Length: 526
Ligand code: OOB
Image 1 (tube, rainbow, N blue to C red):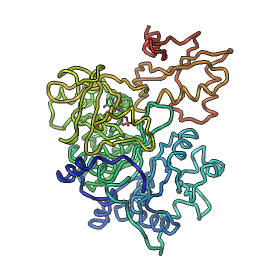
Image 2: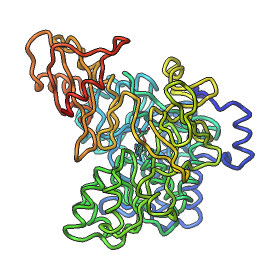
Image 3: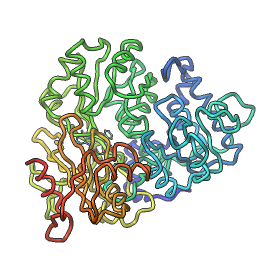
């Protein structure tokens, strides 16, 4: 059994009694559709059209082979796949036999994958030969999983495609109990080591069902997945799992480039998509120049701050309804509702999924703020986690004694009952929806022998919303390119590479002796 911090029993009892937690594993909805109408299309990926029946039988084949290799409940898997149908097949297969995956982003490299593997000690690795780290076996040997399965592999004993084909093997074992860990979600993070979020079947399934309902996902939905598939937004808000819950179709795109996506939307009559604001800007511009793809009816936007001036242009330019999403891999997800007044949809980030999402807005004095005032968002509820995986110190900081999780977002309630995100207190850079924990990059920079001190700070950017600037105190002459090379040699995701380096004589300090990042940021505005 994978350890995690459970909800205290009175909460768990209430969530069950109210019908939020229904005791169903995450593979159940898809299996139901595979039984009821196997020929309906579940995923379109490149030239392939995969039905619910095919998706489920590939997952059964993989699950049977994995269970025959001794994998099952309590085991973990490190999975890194690009946006392809196999991502869902693997996820489903692992749910069926109770193996908890951690789905890394395809942009993740040595630093991230090593940190994840150190935490979960995966028995299974699923990766892609086309990824720079997996071109040969060196890194696989370092990770030393019991079993590695690779996309694009010639050796049949390790070829993922091979493991999805028909087998006589019987699937043994089954999903973990619904109140146990189903998989690990990735935290955007604000600390040195990337943190993992254990999600249970019960809590995640509830967020999926309600998201699908609130976003009016049906079996007619044709959803474009053009951001990383493992991200909570694309997985469950309502994401691909919301679409599978309703029996609709997911169309995979490698990236959100409008040239690629508009073509896919037209070709596959896509009617729903989910984007981060920086991609919305590209779509709106492209549509204003050469027209919008007609079938698109509904666009979800979330993951980063969304300027009302851009939001305003969406319905006209793209000919679709807009829905804002403010969510987090830790749990809480807020939506504007489709029938909300225009000003709510354009200016707010909506309201929580559940009547039992308890949201508090806490001021600097640790007390709830007056109505309408700005403070830090704290939350507990039926699908908000109760603790990072094996991180007691971080949990002591992120949670209060009543189990409220402090998200690090600065928000306010509008008089109409919707939240507005106005800023952040966590030490994080939100680069076009991709989250960078400042401390993680600072620690890696500090490994360079010529760096005496460093602070990573966000700077506003017209395209991405924010970019990162590293302020560096060097003990001998250095150039930005040296530090870029240093980080690349350590192996971090490209989005974490500082966009700019600024060399200074000393870091300004706050009265408690920490780098004064606010002051540093001001020197950039000037
Ligand atoms: C989503 O999840 P994460 O875990 O990558 O990042 C969560 C953080 C939030 O705490 C907030 O700082 C920021 O991303 N954020 C937004 C936002 N949505 C997320 N900031 C401003 N406006 C928004 N609409 O990003 C995520 C998870 C599920 C659904 C949607 C997004």
